Image 1 (tube, helix red, strand yellow):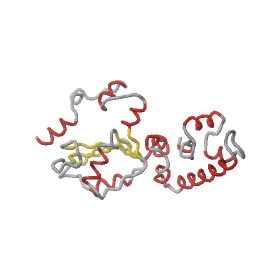
Image 2 (cartoon, rainbow, N blue to C red; image 1 turned 180 degrees about the vertical axis):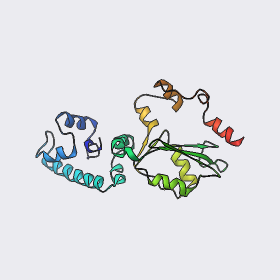
Image 3 (cartoon, rainbow, N blue to C red; image 1 turned 45 degrees about the vertical axis):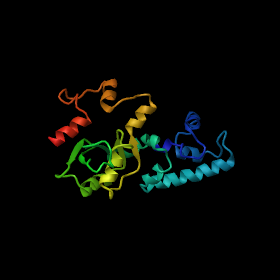
Image 4 (cartoon, helix red, strand yellow; image 1 turned 60 degrees about the vertical axis):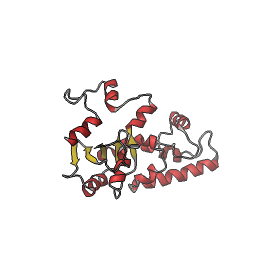
Length: 212
């Protein structure tokens, strides 16, 4: 999907991108191979070709961060196929709702990649070094609500952490599709089920259990 993405080109939106796809311009290479494209001036064609050459170079060099900086965050789902082997799913638990509350701490960081779950627990295994080691192996970070909660919390409590780009927030993606509510409600909407013993638990229960 990534090499079929044109929306980072200046003035190109989803409608234009889809029109190009219908016209057979399905990849960067296909676009650059065309001497002319309907509706695109020769000047813009040259500019687009140069931008695509740079994008291709970034991809070949593994500089996904460079590409991600040009593509709007809500479109970072386009990195999925390219990054699949190294996608890291991240979720945290805390004792409060604000990362700037001095009494609130990160208690657990849950990480999932390639069928492996790793749970980092405060005062046991949770540290900047261990968390960074996991993030460094990641080429696409996926969260649910991480843009407004998980990442700001981790930034505040582990200020030396470096986060990979791109980052895809499933919560924002659901909103674009008209799906509202928390993760458990959305799971039910989509027919997903959890262990009945866990079905009623939420973030407040995680904080309560931690205190106990």
